[in-house]
Length: 241
Image (cartoon, rainbow, N blue to C red; front, side, top):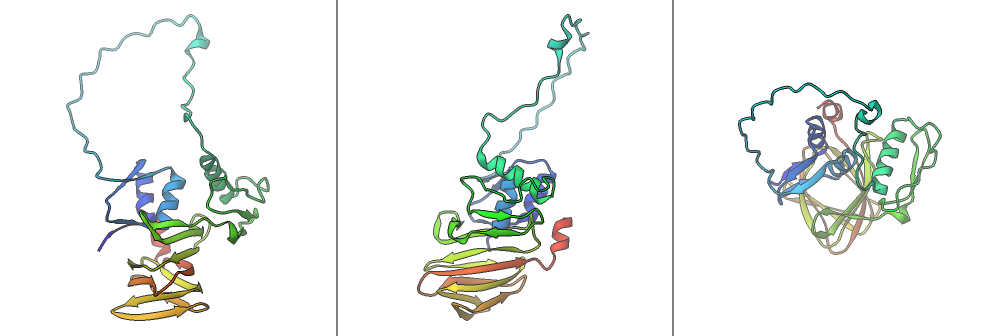
């Protein structure tokens, strides 16, 4: 079974003050974990975490009396470091987090995402959000595999329910749920296998997959598009953890 990195793992790294999440090639990073990492500014790096060599600390230098300052203005504390380059995505994430917490009031009743955002949407100050479906850009669910794509449209930063789109084209993959999930088949054929038994859902059908289940999901013979809603049954525990 592949190792799974979820949103709880990203939150732990944030609490530890770390900026990089090291994963191996056989590690699966959930969509919510990717969103949480992007929001927190944590880089997901494939490879082993570099080992830190512990050396005996050098002896502390003898204290030196400070020289008198002839020009007090020149001795002011240095300004805080500013990143060499601020991307539009960084600005978007900051404004989004402030808006989600209600700190911008009505200033951004309609939120315009950055040019490289995965979709366009409108959002009311109350939290109501309208995603424009014809603007959604799908991302690879597993890096290097373009046959399984997804895009999370409503994330857990603004709602207890995570919703999005999943597209599978002539492929299958195994997955262990750490949340309850409802899937609605928009088009194509969606096949879910559990305990060796296959269940096939066609366009217009809905499937519920319980938390903790290990399933194989796939597209039977052509591309299928699924709208999903996920909700961890232990959501309160995850937030506290």
